Image (cartoon, rainbow over all chains, first blue to last red; front, side, top):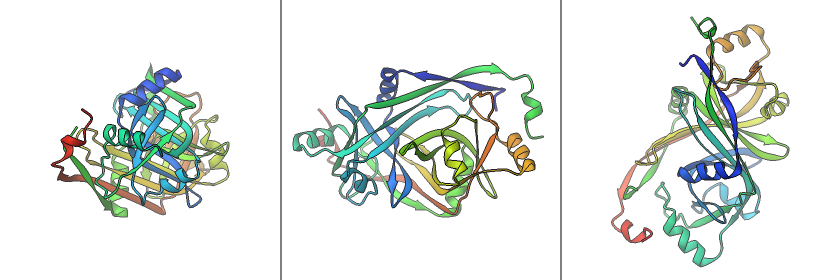
Amino acid sequence: MPDQSSLFKELTRAESLYRLGSVSLGRIVFTHNALPAIRPVNHIVDDSGLIIRTHHGAAIISAAVGGVVVAYEADVIDPDTRVGWSVIVIGTARFVTNTEEISRFHRLLRPWVSEPTMDHVIRIDTKLVTGFELVPGPSEPDSASNRQS
Amino acid sequence: MPDQSSLFKELTRAESLYRLGSVSLGRIVFTHNALPAIRPVNHIVDDSGLIIRTHHGAAIISAAVGGVVVAYEADVIDPDTRVGWSVIVIGTARFVTNTEEISRFHRLLRPWVSEPTMDHVIRIDTKLVTGFELVPGPSEPDSASNRQS
């Protein structure tokens, strides 16, 4: 465990979207049966928004049908150094219905999980994007005394 | 990009809790201002539940005051091999109010982010725990033709 906590630094929208696009895995957050739900999923960032694919039986389907607001989070945080970043998108999730777009995203985005029909493409708009970076903070001279003996 | 998708395998409750306890970083999911919210946070798994710490101004505070149901997710998924696991807890988040317990968790769980007052300890009950593993699946002979040229 390092002897320092990290400092919190906000990222701009552009920095956040750039980092989101630099990774392929995130987590979609939505409401399912009136309970908070979260699922890891792979994504791409397109000019038009954040794109994910899912299968017919997925819980997220009911959210996307209604065009509801979801959250999407991706992060890269090193548990040893405690530095890294996290980006959160809050936006409306909707099915992509244009067949040309669906074909394009089927080529660009290959699901990680082998499901019989990963044929639904969902776009999440990226109107609200926030992000932060954890950067090394000052060392804590008294940290040893705070630890469990 | 590997030539295969992964297969989905459910984990038992015991396997899920074991894996959750093997990592220190997860993401808490709650409702904030009527919108889905998610924050990365570090945790420990205690006999009594999942323990996190937070500061006075954190958005999660309003959820914990009401004793509302939250979700908590942790995962280790390799983007190259596409194998790994994810565990999700759905449970009620409540402040720990017993001063001895608070002191104990302050020693056991050191926040990663340097905040003036990370003095709130929140316990999430682990009644509902689900998890899955992604294991290597069959190779896909036609994968090359599906890729973007």
